[in-house]
Amino acid sequence: ALARARTPPSPQPNPPGLFPASAAMAPLEGGGGVGVEARVHSLWIRQPDQEDLGGPAGGLGHPVFERARIGSRAPVAVGPLGLAESLTWHIKACCSKRFAEEEREGRAVLVQTSANLQALRDANLPLRQPLTDMGPGDFGENLFLDASGLGPDAVCIGDEFVCVRAGVEQPLRLQVSSPRCPCMKVDKRLGKTYTKDGVRAVCASTGLAGFFARVLQNGDLQDGDQLRITARPHPSWTLGRVSQLLYGHPTAVMNYVHRAMTAMKDGVTETIFRSEWMGTETELNELAAIPELAVPEWKEYLHKLLELSGIGRYRPRTSERSVNPIALVAVALGALVLVRVAAGLARRGGSGTPGAAR
Image (cartoon, rainbow, N blue to C red; front, side, top):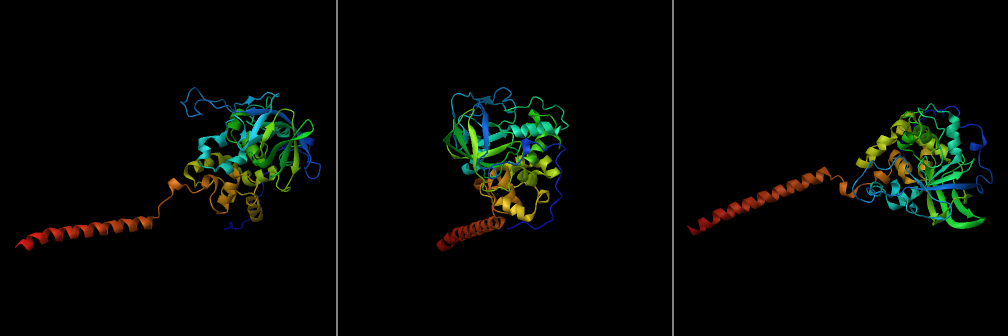
């Protein structure tokens, strides 16, 4: 069923200076983006601790976005769920309970770029702590790309990357599945400002927090590799546009984190309200139909808005399905009738035996 047609709200302007007219945010060249390359600056993994592996909790846990940078000498294996030996949210039990494996594979590799970091610095956001020390690894990414032109308006849903090492194509193939929807940890790590002007809120509505990629073909990565765009099936669906449409409304961007956490528990709470969708009816249906779009935090919310079958955290839960109340009443009445019949037979049987003796 399609959602009811409505007049979309006026788009909210980005903070002044967020998208400066500079090379950092310039459109990609080379056949609409195909052929453009970005250099792998660094690779980052989060190693599991005792609690992650099912052992007892100890200490204060991991610092916010604690990651270990991998050395540049040996390539790191990359599979369907991301970098080898790296524990991230989509691998944890809390995620595997709610999302099918193919849904979690849409979050295999988290990518951040130098263009996004520069745009945030240039925005001069009114933060409690300046972003002067912000650098690679600060967004909890697995892969940091040195690419001055790879901002949210220069990357599209479905873009495919091939890895090139010393001029030779490698087996690894990645596909952009969604912008990264940042959690509250971003504000804890960067800026310490928990308002609409904070790093998390600004990134959610602009796509500056990076993007997720699924692994189309397993392979490996190492510092210094080049990632080259080889396909662009949806050139009009940039990460910036997608982010603004779903998370651009001022109430949505300030409430989606808590709503999403509640929805993980109850499977019904709306994360984005229909009145908060920032686009047209046509855009809503078109975006929801893009097969490459990731389910977590994106397609699952679009399905909810369109009243389609539940996916992701909204998928019907077998062990938690509600029972039809009419069926319960019918069963109860049937059981009561059986009890009364049995009682009546017992009484007749008990009184018939003495009578026969007389």
